[in-house]
Length: 299
Image (cartoon, rainbow, N blue to C red):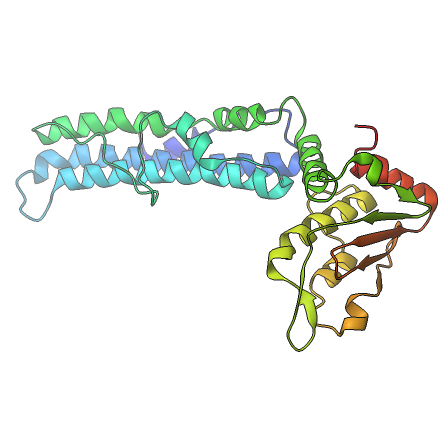
C-alpha cells in the first residue's frame, strides 16, 4: 500500500463531549498529524522489507540499525503526542495534570529514561528478519488512541467539566493562600472592605520598593482570583492587575498607599509592611459577594 493510500485512511473519531470547539480542533489536528506520521514510519518499514533482499550484504547498509531507528522514532513521537495533549489542557485550563503519571498508564513498561529517551525494546533476535518482526510487534503499543489520553484526563476532573475543575482549583489556591491559615470568624467584611491580616507577601528595597521574588507566586494567585471574580475567566489576568504585578520599583509612599485598580468591581488594593492587605470593592454588596464566592464563607 502506498504512503498516500495510508494517509487517506487516517480518520479522526468523534472526541469526548468535554471538548469545546477549540479543544476539538486542536485534538483532532494533533491526532491526525500523529497518525499520519505513524503511517509514514509503517511505510518505511515496508520499504526496508521490500528492498532488503536485493541489497542484503551491502557493506554500507545496516538494516538492523534502520529498523531500530524506526522503532525509536515512533516511540519518541508517541511520547511527544501524549505530552502535547496533556500540556494543552493543563495550560489552557490551568488545571493540575501530571504528564508522567498519565504516560505511566499509557506505556506499560518503563520505556523512557529521565531525559525522555527511548529504551530499545523490540530489537532482539539473531537474524535481521527476526529483528524486523520484533520491531513491528513492539511499535503497535505506541499507536496511542487519543480517546485513551482524554479518558485519563477526564478521570482527574472528579466528575466536573474542565471549566468547573479550573474554577475549583483557582478558588482552592486562593483559599489556601489567603484564608485557610485564619479562622473564618477572623476574616470579615467591613462595609466594602476585606482585611487580610497576614498574607505572607513580602517586600524588598534596593533603590526603591518592590515585591520580593518569593511573593510573586502569591500575587499571581491573588490577581488571577480577582480577575476571575471580574470576568469569570480562569486563564487570564486583567491588564489592570498585570500592570500592578509588573509595576517595578517605586518609592515607599507609593508602595504602601492604596493602588486603585480601575476595574468594575474592585476599587483598590493596599499592602502594608507587616504583610496585611486590604481589598476595597466598589460597593458593600460586591464585597459580600467576593467573600462568599472566594473566601468560602460558611464552610
